[in-house]
Every structure is written in C-alpha cells, then in structure tokens.
Amino acid sequence: MDVEEYSPVSTLISPVNEVKRSKYPFVDIHNHQFDMPVKDLSKLVEEMDSLNMGFMVNLSGFRGIYLKETIQNVKESAPSRFGIFVNLDFEQINAPDFIASNLELLKKAKQDGAIGLKVYKSLGLTDKDAQGNRIAVNDQRLNPIWNQCGKLGFPVLIHSAEPASFWKPKDKYNERWLELKQKPSRYRDPEKIPSFESIIAEQHDVFRKHPNTIFINAHMGWMANDLKRLATHLDTYPNVVTEIGAVLAELGRQPRQARKFMIEYQDRILFGKDSYKVSEYYTYFRVLETDDEYFDYYRKRHAHWKMYGLALPDSVLQKLYYKNALRILPVIDKNLFPKP
Image (cartoon, rainbow, N blue to C red; front, side):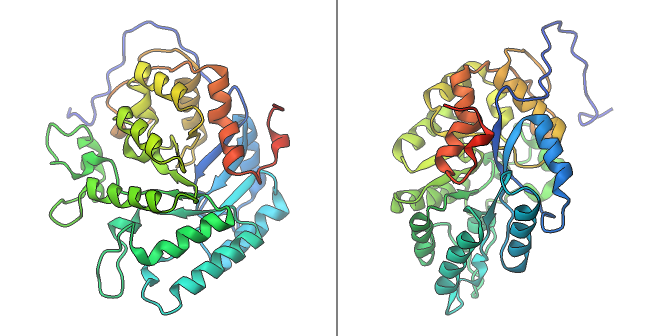
C-alpha cells in the first residue's frame, strides 16, 4: 500500500450532523454549466430545489452564438433561476478592433440578459498576444474593459493565479503534493511561469486602478490559508468582494480563525462552489452551519486535513448565502429569498 491508498477510518466518536439542504436559500455565485445551450434545465432546477439553491450563476457563458443560445434556453426554461456571465478572448488583444468590439460585446451581452464578466485564470498565466508574450492581468490595453464593466454595472468575477503551493517544489514538504502527483499539469514551474506573488500583484493593481468597478476575487483570492492577509486585502480595496468556491477546506481546517473572519467580513463574502456535484454541497453546509468536528472533505487530493464546523450565526449565514449576492447582483429575483 502507498500513501495514495491510505484512507484510515477514524475511531473518534463525535456528533454527526449531515446537512443536505442549506438552512437558508442561497445563491451560488461560482458555477460552471458548460452544456447550458442545450441542457434540459428542469432536472438541474430540481436538484437546486433539493439543495435550497435559489439562484445559480453560470460563469461559462462564453460569447457569440454560444452565449445567445445559453441565454435563450434560460429565458425559455427557468428565467428567474440562472444568471449568465460572459467571457472574452484576451488573446485577440492585438486585433485593431479589440477594444471597440469587446466594449460593444459587453454592452450587447447586458442588453441580451448577461449579468457580469468572468475572467479565467488563463489571463496572467497562459494567455499570449500575437508576439507570443504573456498578457499580464494588469495589461494597460485592458483598462477600457474594466471601465466598461463599471459603467454597465457588470461585476467582474476574476480568477488569477493558483494556490501558491503549485509553485513550490513537489517534495514531501508540499501539502498539495498528492494533487500535483495526480494532476501534474497543475504544477507551475517558477523557471517558466511568473511567480504567484507577481500574478496576484497584477490582479490587485487592477483593483486599485478601477475603484468604480466591482470585482469578485474568486477562491478568496488564494488567501484563505492566510486570513490576516485576506483581511488586509479587503480593507485596502473597498470595491472587492470574495467567494468561497473551491477553498472550503482551507476554512474547515481552521474553524476558530475562520469563524472570526467570516463574522468580521460578513458583508464581503459570497457563497460559491465552482464544480457542480450535488453531494459536495453537503460538506459546504456542514462546515458553515454545524459545529461538527474532525470529518472528511469530499476530495482527498485537496485536503489531507480534517474539517471542523464553523457554526456561523444565522445573520452571517443569511448574508453569505443570499443577501450579499442580492446586493452585488440586483437583477436576481428577490422573491426567491426570505423577506428582510
């Protein structure tokens, strides 16, 4: 047997509170439904109802005919339950009409029913211009796009960089070693790719230069393992909020510190999940709502450590689950959620 197979069954006897439905209806601000143009949404809505998910944001709206058909399917099938974010092709940055065409694309996307812009991690990591140069997150040629989003009231959910451990040596000291072994493409060779710190510095520069645009810093900005740093970040940029998608394990392993942070910054944090699988939401609910101890995260390669419940107060849960999202995305039907 090797370490990948080792899955000890705990002998600890402690309370178990399985939570398969959130205490309050929630908005999932970070989801991906890549087949939405042709998807039968009725089954998805049934699953959402079972979880108590009032509204889902599909960040993978893309553009062109794909975006048009996605929005059309939503309008015909479940217009009050889904919101679509548009995506841009930054590698066309050298095109003579890049800015003009994308400003018009964003304007028309809003007219057609899109509600925001999603920026993938490829910007800053792998996107290149016509000369083969990496496009920095804060490339000045993109400034008109961030300004346009502010004018349109389009929040920008932006994912920059990766967990810092992906840049570290793949050795016994790296707590993401198993993930890097199973998913070797996630390793970021510091000899070939700019550092974690330099990429997030570029992202933060965008936040600083565009105070009139709302940015949703995805995955808690990859700072959930350093909540003091994340607190400073939110204090510095009042136009930034964040979300917990794919970083729940970071919160669940530090329950006292995480609970304190979630209470203190309760107006700045949104609920997000990222990849969609019904049973995985149960772990989110259990960490956020219960005070259970020492239970498993749902994906071993992300977390060798155990989870502990935060037992967040109801007032904080309400903001995390839906109130903050309703403020950031006022187009959401408020009738889906409890009255103030």
